[in-house]
Image 1: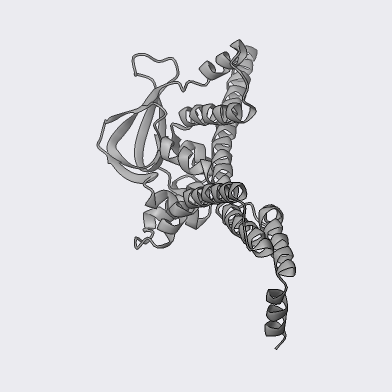
Image 2 (image 1 turned 30 degrees about the vertical axis):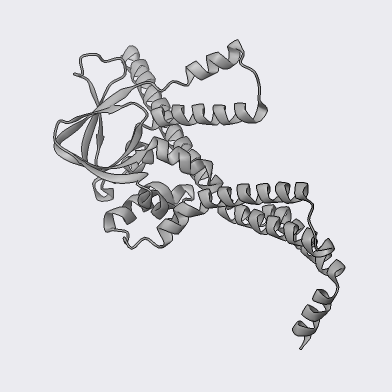
Length: 300
């Protein structure tokens, strides 16, 4: 048996076994970064690499000096901790006994599928209560303070127009049924999302703090101005006369999960960018229509 013979040969030579373990640990620690962008997978490879490094040092001399033992053990503990932070939400989602409802599946296809979020990541958001369904009564007022973002699933909500203090002028965000909108305009994600601007500001602040920690830069007037400029402007929306069903997205829980999942972070940033692009495009189109109508009226 070739496998048994190879195993016997390797174990009979401690130096060879040590070299093989060291090479495999290098693969786990370095080469794995090119194989998959998944954060949990990379951190698992990091744990395996640390174990193999520790084993390689022990096999070579049948002894590990105290300072090397402390260093490698510390790195192994840190690696295990980081892996558990990434893997625990995924494990809870995998073993969750709650199946996706029709409403869950439709929300996923409308909101998250287009930005590359996987079904497992979506189930992770649900099992961690980052996403939860909420029913609002008619004429209920909900503040948009950056704590949550909302996806309008059914019903109607109205947002006071910018600069309006009396609340008489409203921008209406309606429930969307593809059959009711032949032009497809209402199918845009930005027509269903409420609080995305506040979330974008909070995300910008979080990314700025993360970059600041990495660079270890000192505070300057420019940095302070940047931090102050990212304070999310508050807003509100008013639920319509028939109430509304919404998928509420917790900002703090989502940002925490994004710290330990680079793929999730990329998908959410694409979602925010998509909303901003659609709103900007719609604003430019409306501005173009207004200017053309003014030109036509001036001609006549």
